[in-house]
Amino acid sequence: MAINVRIYDRSARVAMSGRFDFQVHRDFKDAYAPLLDNAAVHEIEIEMSQLDYVDSSALGMLMLLNERANAANKTVSLLNTAGAVSKLLEVANFNQIFNIKHTSVFIPDSRNNAYIPAKRSSAFSCQQPRTTT
Image 1 (tube, helix red, strand yellow):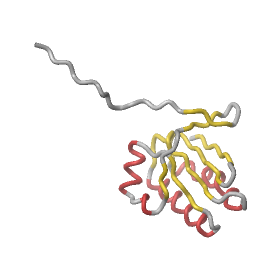
Image 2: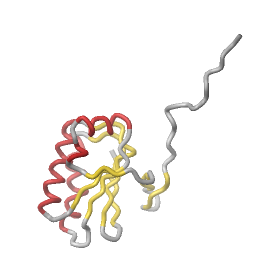
Image 3: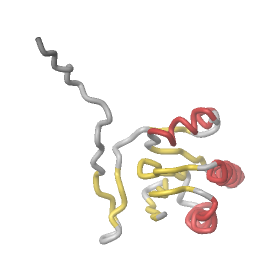
């Protein structure tokens, strides 16, 4: 999994891609820990649009981040959840704990440390099926 952090005016965005599971717990903590100590950061946004998989340990990591952020008077928002990840967060009632936002979808561009727009594919077709007579 790749983790990129960007700091904006009063918020920081942690963008992740791939699998969010126990194997990345150290990388995830290393990504957000400095943000908790940064007085300029008031909100930590977790960009989730490029995640393929989230397990229960990832939910625990998000809960721990939320607790630590609350202790530091910061908020945590989950951005652009989709598909199975969105369903899992819904079943776990994370919408009652976190602010879940749907914004423009961006993916990290590691070549120049910036974000580029992501291309989303549609899983549904709006075309009517053809009938033959």
